Image (cartoon, rainbow, N blue to C red; front, side, top):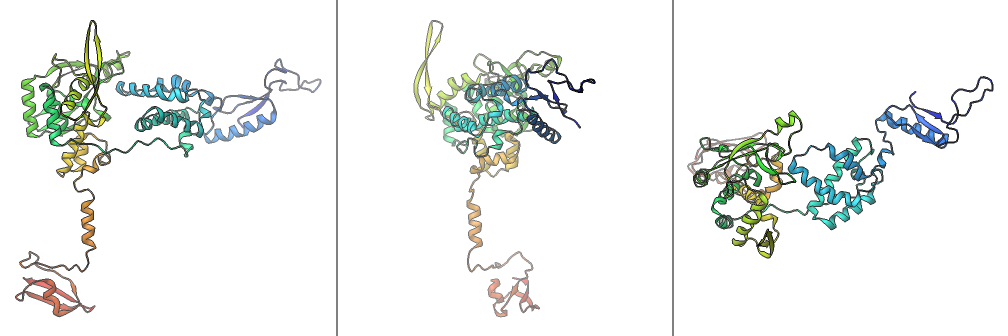
Length: 478
């Protein structure tokens, strides 16, 4: 049977002359009894044979079940595990890797990075949650909690933990973001903001409102993506930046391309914009701006060239940070959507410029145009399934979760139907000149047939008594 205990101080076989086991060169040094020979389990030494026997029995049982976790592997600190084992194996897109790295190194590691994996218990998690909520908003705390859960799941897979502490200690609930409904603009607000933008950027509003594009998708849209003949726009890429601010193209969020119907008026605006501001050629790496290290990476990151429809006045691609601060927010303030709360100085060599500081309002950033697109579609009675495909959601459930409150009369139609159902003394009547050629019902009183049906004295009706004493009525003509 696999697994045995070795006495490190005495030789295995007794002396043939004396019949006693002789001492080894390790006699008196270190722990005496070593457990060996369990498949997939590292050897371990103990001071007493009793401790060794107990551990051997437990380790053999857990190993047979596939549940053995060596406590020594769990002694590594959370920070060391992240830095040495978890992070090097990540393969996130650059635009995802940057924020992920920032949240873990700025919040997870400072709060509990020095705690050994095996010592992360309910108390540790409670302190972590409390400290996290003092640092960030609940919505961000929920995301960071998800990162910690993922890290500990990997530790379980790596046989450093038997179970994920986050899942075991159910008394510690994950931070919950405050529920916020998606906000949509009214027509007047959208028109006001559009009119306050520079002329070349007004088409960005049209793309957000008319196609439901995310900001990166709008900035990465090319002239060849417009199929005016078929009346659709192909959403095939987005413009993103890595943590170093290097631009690149990649697939839309979730890796999903899609086709969105192109309204005739939006098509007319697109043609006018192309004439006024001709699309500009732009060549950028695909998926990752890092120089490729292998032939496969060179193939995967091969630059692509497209004719961007939204560019700066210098004919360059748009950088979202500059565009938000120098174009979008000033337009919001000019339209009365945002307030200016101060100003900051920006130094350019020997020159200094003053820029306004705006109040924080994430709900009024470019994404509000996408919400407005969804609200208009739903208020017009469009199918949730169709809208989900046009927005690029992975399922209609996500669309419902975000935009159910935009459905017209949500809750009222069901209330009206139930009210009608519960209406007392309700009697069904067939109007004169009804299109129904025949109608059969059960009536209990023969003289009331014509009154209950609601037809005049000239009505031609045949009826006969049923087995249960009622009347089978057949209307021939009303």
